Image (cartoon, rainbow, N blue to C red; front, side, top):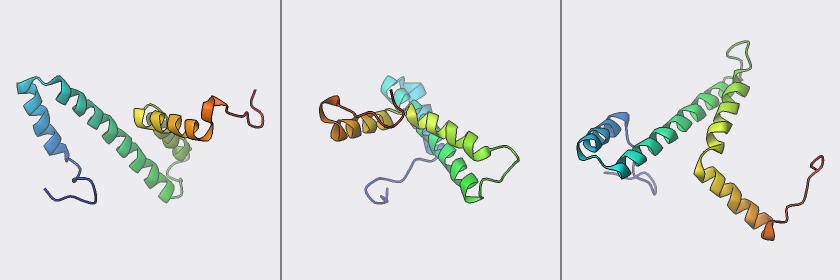
Length: 108
């Protein structure tokens, strides 16, 4: 398997289906959990792709405000990911040692 940079190539839907078939016969809770995580991350990647396509087109796909709807959905999906939560916590600890975050303008 050739690598692309530091990561091996992404798994295709067909490769994931084969792993899922293997998991069904071997009943591996660890593999099942990883498959669910991969499915979640693929969903976020598809949403990000959708958002990028809308933004590249100028956000004028329909008379609805598509870019905001898609962007809000993407933000919600990203906010639910442990990697994003962990990064934010790390950044906050780095920027505000001891948890002493200063309030911004308009914050109570």
